[in-house]
Length: 347
Ligand code: NAI
Ligand code: MG
Image (cartoon, rainbow, N blue to C red; front, side, top):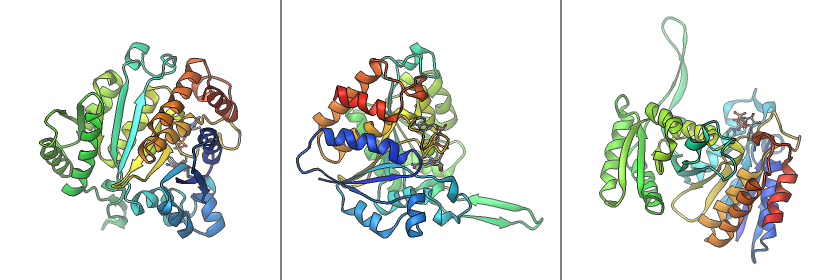
């Protein structure tokens, strides 16, 4: 079992270190962790945010544990040299088209949510975000209009096959949960969304036991804070999913708690916290590593088939939170290593 560990920039290495300690504590026979450079640190060392050696390492691995990329020192560089291109490149090169982002309120965090406790405690949802298409990967450019002003443009597009494969992932996920799927689009305005909606309806025929609904993205943003308990699985495109999942994170207390899995057709996948490199707190030992530790649990479950070990990690994090273990993001004072210690003790 080979795991590529790509820690990246900012708080990436700090939170990844704690997740690695948790994985090592399980003493899994045959587990090998291999580190690679990615992001701004790779640009500085190799002249590119995603070196060939790192891509090869990621391809050969059974799963990838990813920290975060993003480095203010690289802000002045051309777009293709920016650290963020590494994560976009990995998702595209490895065909990781399905991003799973679960959000559930942990016991004891009712007061940490941005929502009222009785609203927040009902949250138990999974956002399934398409990751290889949409406006992030469409043609783009900046052109000069006849009147001399600049105009930026980014093409939003989805083909039926792209929608079909993410829809299947979402319906299957709903099957393993409460049997409800909400597809979020903007079909009242966007042609992209019309194809999206028609295709989701077509795929639904294969899953008659799943209760399918559709919602426009603006309403979904509102419903997510008004009554998040109504959602089980939410499937949506790359842009809408990016925004809605950050919003969901604050509904359950902190971005430092949200894990994610990015999956393709095979069993391999990339696992990362949904947050970025947090330059404002990097190097200070203040980051909450729980999102990365929970991402490691998702890795064991989805890529290595180790359900019991994944559940042990999740239970240890839940117990730590229930016992009052809090980083600064949750109004507490504990640092990265102390939170890692607290999870390890309970494991
Ligand atoms: P961010 O997620 O890095 O930080 C947003 C806020 O949340 C900051 O105030 C930060 O201190 C806080 N925060 C994030 N993670 C935390 C944790 N584990 N514990 C405690 N507090 C935490 O988003 P931001 O500031 O917009 O982006 C910073 C850099 O990260 C940028 O270069 C951005 O492009 C990159 N980024 C990379 C991602 C990735 O590698 N997948 C995802 C999102 C952003
Ligand atoms: Mg984001």
